[in-house]
Length: 197
Image (cartoon, rainbow, N blue to C red; front, side):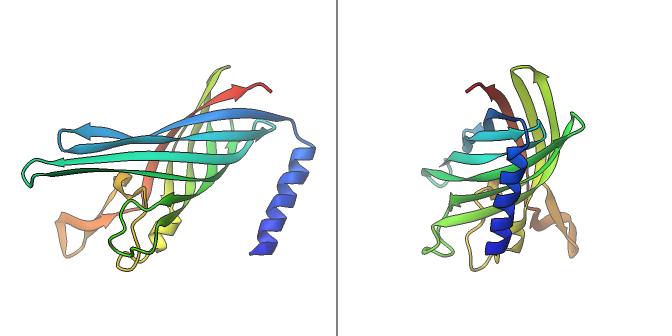
């Protein structure tokens, strides 16, 4: 594991020495939804080192707020989680990107394993990357959470992003009723802005 980390650092260092580097700030809005029963809003700030307008990488800072209001049962509540991580995107053909994002976020609930306060997320995926104007570019993609796909749902907390999953599995025993859970796939939209230093 250490050798992979060292090789990655050397690769980035060697690549960045011979490349033209620019900087971007990114703003991501995540799971902005709400009703009289509850909802969530949040997002992330990203700082991108961009080499030769192709390889973008940097840190992520995240905050998400959830609220619930159950009128029938007579209770309400809210929760905020924080986290951070890093991302690596490869932009190509002036239209697309492939990449990965690794984050550690506070668990959204702690009823399965109270001693586990943090939840890892390891996303791989891609989508569209398009320069909309000289001052703004758009990343819109689908990401698959490898860590949540391998997580044991009985002994560990769900991913902090599990409320954003939207693609439902079918249970073969009851194909018309769903009930198979959700694939750990999220949609992510980020706007990047050039930074001049």
